[in-house]
Image (tube, rainbow, N blue to C red):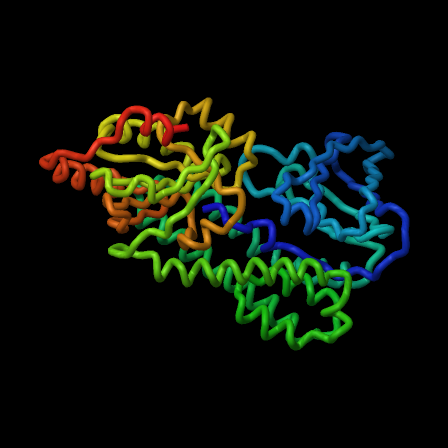
Length: 407
């Protein structure tokens, strides 16, 4: 699953405000094989506006065993979150990059040593005492993060049909995640006046723990440069809580929430317009960034052709820019009704916690079944429902209505 607000889960670090000027990062790396550095950065505004992360390829200068880089960031008053990595960070195996935050006019110097065999990079940050304290504490978590990343790669390779293997890996990933979270919580509780505690706080995914630990912070930390990131995390946690509540309410036997979303021709599609046709309805919540969503499209197309006339399919794109959605629908030749959710409202209302999520509705809009992940049980259930319904004569719409729905 791609987390719905994944960018919010790793944010934040308090910096002392600087007056004017462009932020600059200087990097000196020993042991780098090439002379190019990947630099990716974003801001709270980037997340709110659903913009893509900006990625630059920065050239450096060789000075003996060291390669040196200088990177200037735009001056817009935001605190940038920045990721740095050598271009050679590709292929399989663990990967480590460098992470820092840069405020307006901030000057941060990164000193790093890179081992290309192990792909381990050790680095320090100079220019912000709070940030270096955070970095020192983060180093204690590196072994757990590497294990978590390795397991994440394993989970992505496991077939969804191998549930036992997948469950074992997921349990171990959860154990590691809990260990990391407990470490951060302990740091915050022990250092309420340290701006570095704000970084750990922003990365906590639990609303209750976030709120209780936030209240322990000194006012100077609460109102610091990181305040915008904290507000953003609070928004995320509120959506997460609402999603969990909706998930408990949007269940089999209940009515699906109605919605109206834009279709590909600029018009609107309303879910309830399909009610009363005698057809079952499949809602497919997907996105181009979701690997299993895309892998499952051929099977979806086969099911669509198999049950044409008895089932209406509705693809609900989530998290993509409009042009990406349109191009993908065209390239994949998805023949069913396709709409796009421009924000997270529909995800919250339906309690969507993973992708793809497929829901089967009866002809009146009642939820018959719900599946998260590319689950073969979805197709079995659909076959069974349609098999029973074919004994009845389905209601039909005229061809012009059908064409309008597909627009």
